[in-house]
Image: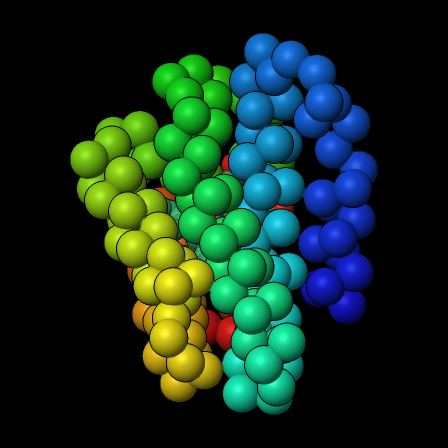
Length: 158
Ligand code: HEC
């Protein structure tokens, strides 16, 4: 259910191919990027990197994609795109993203390091350990910088 919703969110963002000037567009873009990471992370959790060699390599490539998304996220949280600047419901980001910029960027960096460790993992066990670190980094940031927890409603969510 959540998977279908997340995919729909990613596909329905209308203007990713054009300029992202309006703060509302920027919020929609970062939310779609978050949903894309969610879908990619699900693959690792569902399939497990130890299934076979082809799966292992594909999952490491998907971790590379997550790392690339994380690298681009600071630009999608510019000044003037927080909850006080947008209509109700346009963003779930907490004011802390802008009030504690250093902490937010550090949390992004921690997640990116975990994704890169997964991308360059030498074997399935190292990959899954790095993905556990990534999962913890996603949740740690959400606990501090999100007005709600997007994983809370999921089965087994934290
Ligand atoms: C450094 C902080 C940070 C990290 C790391 C982070 N997120 Fe997020 N995430 C946010 C914020 C802030 C929002 C709210 C964005 C908004 O609504 O404008 C969000 C929103 C989301 C959403 C809801 C998207 C929507 O459509 O509203 C999902 C799903 C999500 N994140 C998944 C992930 C996953 C998976 C990871 C790890 C691979 C991750 N996030 C890492 C801060 C983070």
